[in-house]
Length: 558
Image (cartoon, rainbow, N blue to C red; front, top):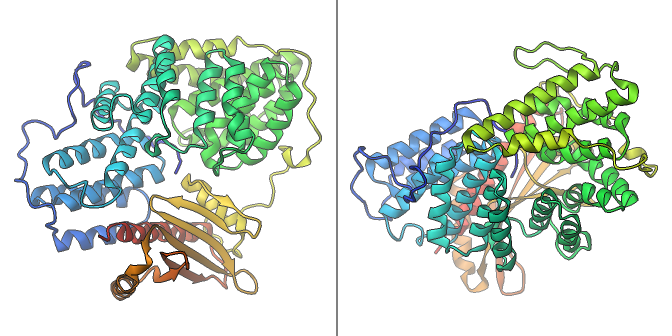
């Protein structure tokens, strides 16, 4: 699930000067004696269930932190682990990935103090390794995560998963590339490419695009396009594809003489990326394509449309790259005689609304990109990110303007139906549902019947509109874990207990007739009189939270 950072103080470094130390609780603090792994505090269990139903944001963060601290104090290791798992996932959902390092570190310390804790429930060990990956990735995305802290977490992951594991090789490759150590990055890339698929390493359908982005950054355009082939040919797929792969291939296609392929890919991919909040990191590729393909006017139109998203970016790295690509577009537009054109920029924080000309906007964007690059380099002790920005600004169009196919759906002057104001009730629409998920930074797909499908941890959730006018929001939750048909009586007992103790979702058992049982649930909300976007956000937040809790309860069955 995907989003952008908040503006709070960053985590302090947890590691020491390059020495590997497995994460542990800070020295000098009294630790409670280890309690039996199965011991649970009923009050904490109830508080954690209530916390999952809180609105997304600081209230939920604060309550989960309080529960985790209380669990530490009373020696309830399971509740401490569950609360910090929920806290990590709340940070990720809210777009504050940079904050996950500390709760991940404490989860690892809890697991080390209580051997067998991760074995008590299927999937917990893999879940914690995945959270370690998120914490290390956060160091690539923002300088607010200490480099020593990320290295300590990565070394610990190598100890737990094996130094040659695919996820470890991938992270060492990406971290070395971020620091500008291309030889080390290439060595780890070769290790990564030789490993078997690893569920902890990320979505298999997205890894080719990640590899292609690295290869293109090293100038290996042919290798980058070869890496994308499994996605573009439909061998691998995910809800982000093929548009993410197309964005990764824009400049390699352009630089290898396949300009028409690049143009058609840009139109198709941007049609999706223009409105998806989680697609913000791909916008720099679209802007650079417009600049280098001889389309400065289109680049300005895209920049004007997407500029408000720069105030709420996915992370600092994507903000830096967007600003640098936007500065390049402004520079080339000015060289083409468009420097006096005005670009509206909405107010944000202390910055008033304005309409700077292209040259002024370009200067402002360059200053932002340079400042962010400098922050990365100050933390990293290198000049690599500043050098990347300088190299982007030195690029010039590769040839005459690349012809773009006719595609009205891709034009930026058609913003689509106006969205209702946040507190203005309106009839429920598919666009309102997807806009809510976009604001959350979630990944989802929409089928031909208008059903929205996504996966949150161990829960697959579908959103659809029911009723004569589509006025009912119906959500169906399916637990990923299935039970053998021989456990039918136990499954019924679980669902009956859930329906007795919890309001939502309504739980039931579905026999597939193939020897397996699916445990599912549903939630329906009648919105006959309309729903405001803010209210819909609360409903979706609650549905995802309760759906994940339901799937976790299924996963915890013996």
